[in-house]
Image 1 (cartoon, rainbow, N blue to C red):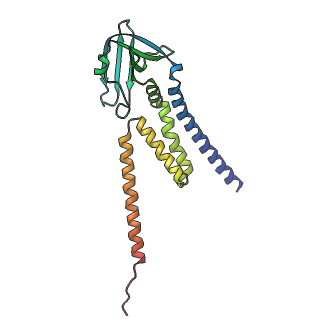
Image 2: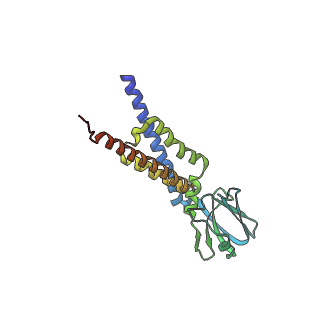
Image 3: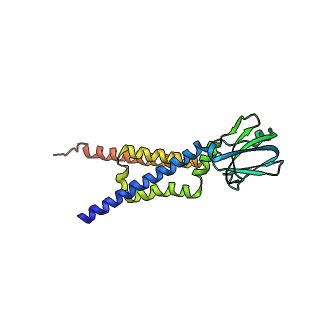
Length: 216
């Protein structure tokens, strides 16, 4: 009995630790976005030319900006379907652009502004989206909940609040990763399965409760 209680306690502690870790990862992403003014520094210049390329699958849009001083900055917009990303035609209308780069002198830019300071692309959104699409962060955010579910079992989703939280979490990740269509498709399939189970259960209950005529 004591060993069983110890194992249950270890499972509960691991689940709590995993949930706290996931929460910390999510909070860090938004804090980085809100603190982008402190994490990035502004650079600007006259634009020599701007190029836009897509990956073979068309999921990633890479924009490169070459300034006349020879500096080249680029940004890969992974989720261009649901989140805003700059349009090449609009960018080419500007001969002078302001971009933000990390203090480590990276060639990746975050956010775009015109010479008048008009925001073309939000640096906060760029920082947040890139953070959540970092492979190691995406790995933990995807597989930790799966491990927690394997350990906890179905009892984890017995409460409606837990099920709602998981649904909201899945929607959040699907939206940021540009996989909202897959999320909605899975949701539709699960809904149809549950609907089928509901009607099957009603039909079975009706068959049990229907009176049976017994002829004398």
